[in-house]
Image (cartoon, rainbow, N blue to C red; front, side, top):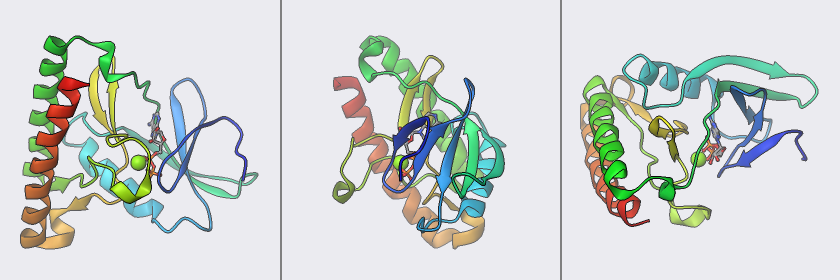
Length: 172
Ligand SMILES: Nc1ncnc2c1ncn2[C@@H]1O[C@H](COP(=O)(O)OP(=O)(O)O)[C@@H](O)[C@H]1O
Ligand SMILES: [Mg+2]
């Protein structure tokens, strides 16, 4: 299906532009992920800090016959937009915020794109004028939902992925 004002397509969903400040992630009949749970996880993380893209509202588009997860529009730029010294500062903030989310009971789980789905390795980590931001909480997990044992495992993996990202980001 061809969507008007398409911004980008990820592994599962298409994202379209709504305005200068808002985009919508489309969930259609053939989307296997659940929009309600994605919205709840986003709201949870938004209450902790600014790292995860901000949730705006849920909506339905009759024309496109699609459920819409409306969110803050980010303006990503190439990682090379900033010199390495500045990137190190952005990384420190990013790590602190990620740890704070873990402490609060939220783990993102998708810093690195799985190798079988193509695309860029880190396309869920966007560099903006305000630093690094995270999108796509599709497979994120809350401690309250998965329990302590699984949550700790996910956090362990995320910390490993964070290290890989640090190396990539500073050498990009
Ligand atoms: N808030 C946003 N602002 C700007 N671009 C976005 C935003 N959210 C998603 N995108 C773009 O849309 C793509 C797909 O979104 P994403 O949430 O990662 O879906 P998927 O689950 O399909 O990977 C992203 O890789 C990114 O390029
Ligand atoms: Mg994605």
